[in-house]
Length: 92
Image 1 (cartoon, rainbow, N blue to C red):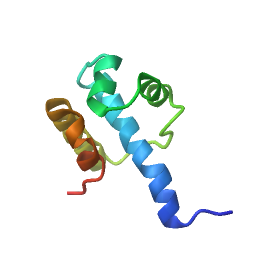
Image 2 (cartoon, rainbow, N blue to C red):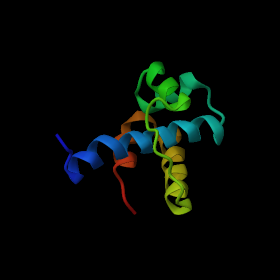
Image 3 (tube, helix red, strand yellow):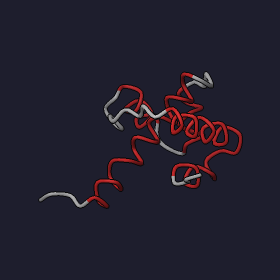
């Protein structure tokens, strides 16, 4: 059965955004994996899957979107798990 556009967006886009947030935690903000999963409220296995490319495989190449993800990651680092949903679902 083929997915509708809405189903595709729901199942594909959030994991890609979360994957980018995990990568930003790791590459830009130099947090260790344990800190990343604590801030995101996910397990260490999930963080490992994002970093290894097993989850959120789609690549974001739009610089504006990547900058927004970087801002969201910074806010998540500062404020913790309570802002994860808001930051992964926000559009500015």
